[in-house]
Amino acid sequence: MNPAPLSGLYAPSLALVTDLYQLTMAYGYWQQGLHDREAVFHLYFRKAPFQGGYAVAAGLALAVDWLENLRFSADDLAYLGGLRGSRGTPLFPPAFLDYLRDLTFTCDVDAVPEGTAVFGNEPLLRVRGPLLQAQLLETALLTLVNFQTLIATKAARIREAAGPDDQVLEFGLRRAQGFDGGLGASRAAYLGGADATSNVLAGQRYGLPVRGTHAHSWVMSFGNEEQAFAAYAQAFPDDSVFLVDTYDTLDGVRHAIAVAQQMRRNGHELSGIRLDSGDLAYLSIAARQLLDAAGLTQVRIVASNDLEENLIASLRQQGARIDTWGVGTQLVTAYNQPALGGVYKLAALRTEDGAGWDFTIKLSEQQAKTSIPGILQVRRYLSDSGELGQPRADMIYNLAAPAPLPEAPVILDPTDATRRRPVRPGAPFVDLLQPVLRDGQLVSPLPTLTESRAHARQQVAGLDPSIRRFLNPHVYPVGLEQGLHAFRTELVLARRPGRAV
Image (cartoon, rainbow, N blue to C red; front, side, top):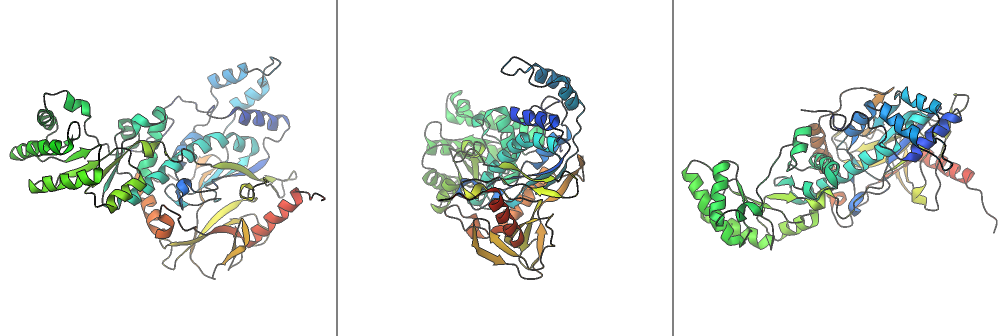
């Protein structure tokens, strides 16, 4: 099951998922006759989230679905036609609205596959096509890719903390930023490494495994805890997980054991118990001892209660006997960093005669915010084991550079030219940005969500442990090809006049 991620859920038109200034710029381009001038934009972030060493690229399937269905409906155009400027006149003239009515998306899009480990300043998407069209995409692409990448990265970190064998369940819908936030977070969390979700709509839309237990209200609806567990077991004789901390946690475990033994006599087995409060390390150890002593070694211990990667790592270090982690608020809201600072920058414009390129650059008082000109690609150099080998360094280079790429290029840190890394001749590599759309049409089917999830697991596992660690991770080397670095420096000097002292 791989339904259309967005268009099948929302209204037929999502063209107005944008900021007003994208449309005012589009009108300005159209008015000035620049709307069909070929342009290149890149979408990237500057710094990995959560003070971590990497991110997991996500959101491409949602972006492609949005792009393939990009049309301005009659209702969209009627709304835009009703907007007024400060003098009360229409903001957009009828002729421009007629242009939008007939607009067909024709850009080329190259992108890093979902699930790929990525780093700061690397383009995740490259959009090439008419300036007006490419500009209109900015807001929607950023909101889709930023959020999905953020949550997928958080899920990958939680998976890292839980280890390869424990289950990670996403339980965050009730704390998510609305229906849409919850649905998108469930998808991204699964891609990043969660095993299942409690979100039933996400299960339906994306084919995710769904899991759940019961609430404290179930226990409180019966005369005592044992009655509540027995009733739940009657309803779900082979799929019961009992929440044991409504009154006293260890007494709850004992009551669960009594019901589980009766279930076994009836030919069924208790699946698990859930701890949702208290000292999870101590209680899980005590619960495991009680369960094992009763011969219930197969019963899993599920823990919840504001879990995140650092707490999970701490509980495991304390010897907690938890094998299933229910993670909610901290995951779906990316609690300690609720936004990824992704940006979308113009990097090249066709010359007026169409024969070449004018490369553009955005300057800043902060060097880290100075953009990278060119038609960019990311080359990932690998260990000698080939495409599945361990990543060693990433080089950003310009596909439109006048000189061919050297056989043994030198990678320069974009913020410190004294930090350089030569690449030995013949080093294996893979170029990360792959063709996705040509002239607005899908080149080939995208991977399924399950395939992208497997790719994410392989990608993160392939990173050196020093890059994956949560505290002060090692900085993975990412830089500019030496020629691109020199060209960028020349462009900065040309655009920034010196001031006399």
